[in-house]
Structure formats: C-alpha cells, structure tokens
Length: 219
Image 1 (cartoon, one colour):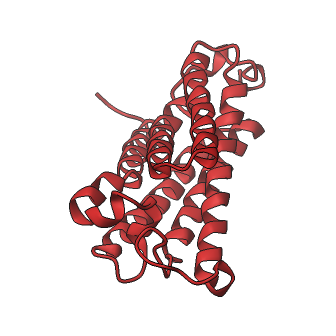
Image 2 (cartoon, rainbow, N blue to C red):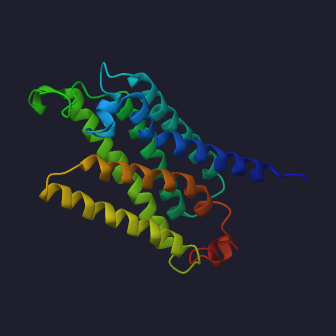
C-alpha cells in the first residue's frame, strides 16, 4: 500500500503523540524509583534537586515537550481553519511550558522537609508559573476542540474529557477544604492530560472534516 506524504506525516504525528503522552505520564515510575516522594508529595517533587533519578523525570518531561512541538509542526500544514490552528498553537505552548517547567525544577520538597518561604525560592515560583501556563494552554486546546466538534459524533469523546477535567476541579476543591492526599488528584490530572495528548491528532487530523460545522470552507 502506497502512502502519500500527508498520510506518512499524519501517521508519524500519531506515533509521536502517543510516545509524548506516555512519557509525560511518568509519575507511576516514582513509586518504584522514589517511593518516599511519591507516597506523600506531588509529581513535581520527583524532579526536585538532589532527588533520586531527578534527571530521568526531567528528561522525560523535556522529551515530551519536544515531541509535542514536532506533532504540532506535522499537523500544522494539514489545517487551514483558524480554530484548529488555535488548538495546535495551544498544544505547542503546552509542550513549551512543560519543557520549561522541567528545566526549572523545585529546590525544596515540601512533603519531605521544611522549606523556606516561597518568596525565597525563585525557581519554585518560575516552576509554578510555567506549570500553570502549561495546564491552561492544554485545557484551552481541549475546550476549543470540544466546541468545534459540537455537531460531530466525536463530540461525545470530547465531552467525556471535559467531564474528566470537571471532576479534577471537584477533587482539587475537596482536598483544598479537607486536607488529604492531594497528589492523588494531581496523578489523575496528569493521566487525563496524557490521554488528551494521545487523542489530539485523531481529533485534529483524520476525523472527516466534511461533517464538522466549520468544514464548508474546506470543501
């Protein structure tokens, strides 16, 4: 079977997105490589200075960010619609901020030791800012795609994902009011993000455009 150039680039995008999603979801490795931090702290603490295998978790996040940027580049030339391009831009920004967050690791692990005031930890502030921006950009890409698919059969899949993000909000609020293992909510969130990273090429790429509400301009 002969594949066209566009089909090969799309297939590569699907493969790289799958790899990016899997390695972004690296927190399960923490229970094996650094159980002390994993059982009490957030996933970010696995990348903190002087933690066991901190370099591995940093490398995995950096690789994930790079692969996500490549996926965006492979899919970018397939799209002409401005809203789908907005999805890809936010997706690429998520990869960029994930990479920056990884190379700006925490200098102290709050779950393992007494840390100084946050204002005396510039790396922690920068790490937090880049992590928040990464989350906002990925969520924005999902929201835009959910809106674009509102009249397409795949809207059901996007609605499940949006429900998942809503549940994360409830979990976070619960652990904010009632002290508890907040890292469980974070692990759930990271897994949810990984699922969206894997699914994004399918939502943007091979799904038939003719049935989408914005496909008339592309006929």
